[in-house]
Length: 262
Image (cartoon, rainbow, N blue to C red; front, side, top):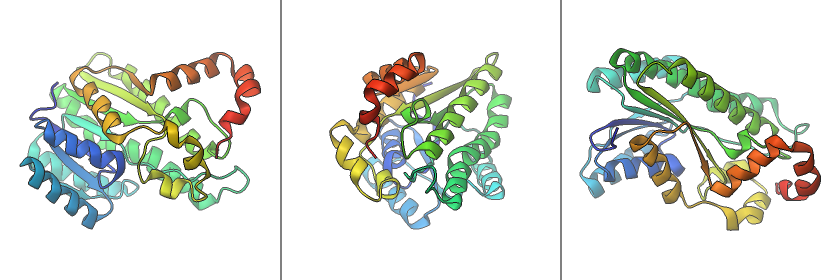
């Protein structure tokens, strides 16, 4: 599956990595369908994409936590385009707090968007993919889903859930031509941290390790051409989380201070 001429639906497409993905899809000749809550930001993004690439960039205002909105929007997309080649479940956010200080509404909000929103969008797109026996679901998880650190217990839990959903769904679809990929990036230079890290401490501490959104976007879109089960960015961070899974006690003992960057 090449990006060219593919219908690629992107949630959380009004800013950050979602917007970068949408622009890159258009540059590669695909049709990015932008989904997010902010109509104004979506319209600006769509106008910019059409102006710079000449590619149509339709957008739909969508709150992924609203099941009826999800059903209605995906029905409209399928009515117009007849198919969804790729669904990129990118919508998500974090609020870094200690477990004790985390507010109930923040906990519920992260699960509603990061987990249940992803589930709702996937369930809306999957029946058509099964009917056509083709498609690709790319779930944006996180290295945090493999290695939970202080002040990210809830966010890590949501991304761990994304990985579990991705792995299970992949096996359920093993006898079809539908691929499921999970992407586990480290910190990316996007507005994500404007909300997640109000103190600015984490951003300051890990700034030198932050990934360029353009690099992350290119790597994600390579999955469309060459699907694989999992993408870890950067590679060394993926190795680190693997070591943690094998030797959690040792990693916590010797790297504990490095993991407490928030």
